Amino acid sequence: MMRYIYIKLDALTCFFLMDVTNRLKAHQAKNDLFYSVDDFSSKLSSGDNTFITKILAVLVSSLLIFSCTEKKEERPNIILIMGDDIGISDIGPYGGEIETPNLDRLAEGGLRFTTFYNMAKCNPTRSSLLTGLYTGGNGAVHLANLTKNAGYSNIMSGKEHFDPWVPEYCKAENVFDHSFYFWATTEYFLPPSGEFEEPFFLEGRELKATEIEYEKSPMYKTDFITDYALKWLKESFQQDAPFFLYLPYHAAHFPLQARPEDIEKYRGKYRVGWDKLRQDRFERMQKLGVLPQSAKLSPPEDNLNKARGPFISDYTDYYPWDSLSEGQKDSLDLEMAVYAAMVDRMDQNIGRVLKLLEEHGKLENTLIMYLNDNGSCPFYTNKIPDVQPGPADSYWSLRTSWANLGNTPYRQYKQCGHEGGSHTPFIAYWPGKIAPNTITQQPGHVVDIAPTFLDLLDIQYPDSIKGYPTLPLHGSSLLPVFLGEERKEPDYFMSGLEKFRMFRSGDYKIVRLNGGAWELYNIKDDPTELVNLADSLPDKVNELSNYHASTQSDKIKKP
Image (cartoon, rainbow, N blue to C red; front, side, top):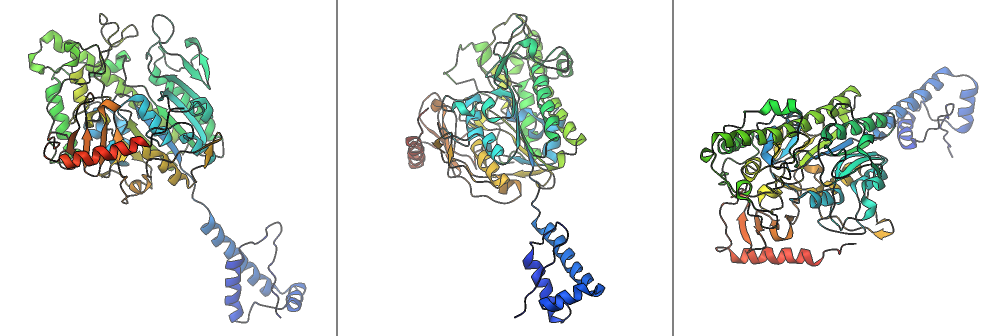
């Protein structure tokens, strides 16, 4: 019986037996390599150079092939960036005139979704984005838990704002290696009082305003949020691990405050008025391909959301631009110039992140995603109406007609399930993986991000978290779409606060305002929701209403 011996070279033991065996068999067929143990020993002890050379050649070639075929692909770094209260058409890649060269770069080098849904308000969107659940409780798993399980370094800098159902263990300091955040809403400049409206937290510890680190004076929130992110990114580059950066900016949520040099850049550009700008944006969106050519521009609307007050007609109603006085136009031009400056500053800071990645050779293996938490906001929150928007001692919000511009070409606003409230831009950039300058009509939702992470990291969803069985995810992976493939569309999408809920399945969508009757739209044929089909298709309304009710019966109670 022939016995065969594999050589051990120094400390390297050859475990690639299958490949080596196949190669040895090929030589055996030529009767030039295989030997019995006695023959093998004799050849080796005699110093037969030809014999030894053949053995080494087989082993080295096998080792090279083994190392090439078995080496796992390097895992990508992940950056998830979120804008706040920014309308879909405010940024350049979706038709806006605001200068956003860095978002333009990501869009031109990556993928844009024509239809992507958030939850129409700050806290529900963040809750669903970071857990993959429409609603939940104990058993929810944070995105950073997934990346941590995969060996990632986790960083967060920006706004944290959750629904009550999100468990305490999902707070930033409990899931991120490094975190700097505030809750909900606070000023951009340090106010005259010397303290912010809401405190900032570093790794869970409350900071005094004087303890916040910043590079540029005067301190400005969008800038120092990025300062912390860059600091921790640099530290992560020293580690032999990929990173996940969650960067939820507060821009351009009220109060309207911006650096003077950024405001000056836009001063006077909005005197043409919201009516002309809205038409211009609509046409650019169609030209860019992010809006169907068959789509129609919805007529301007008042803010019909009666859940939020006070209702002051000067701020919450729509007015034709030509009906305003020159003095009013000048004030309104300033208001929008400040808002545009805030979006511009956010984009500048995204540019700082891209520059750092390039300098350290990290950009090529980084997946970057950008989206907004809801549509543009028309709420009246002017706490200091006697001071014009912009500086640290001001506190203004955007009025309805400007918010209507931001949500071009869609209807309604933040909180609402109509497309203007729930429709966000979504950009995905991943060099070498995502084809550049591509657009997809496949719809997506923020609950799809968690399944995408699982798919991307090639890991299993955990069975339990903090002693609780994990809650099943509600979305499905977007990775096939990123890679240019078709994915099975989820059974339904949901958004909007309960009285403003939308529920979409297939091409049809039901939506309501202020708890009223369901409206019905065919979103494929009527993306701007101009033709209410509820009266002509009552069976479809009942079908979707019952389907929606069935999903609500399975709601997990708040913890």
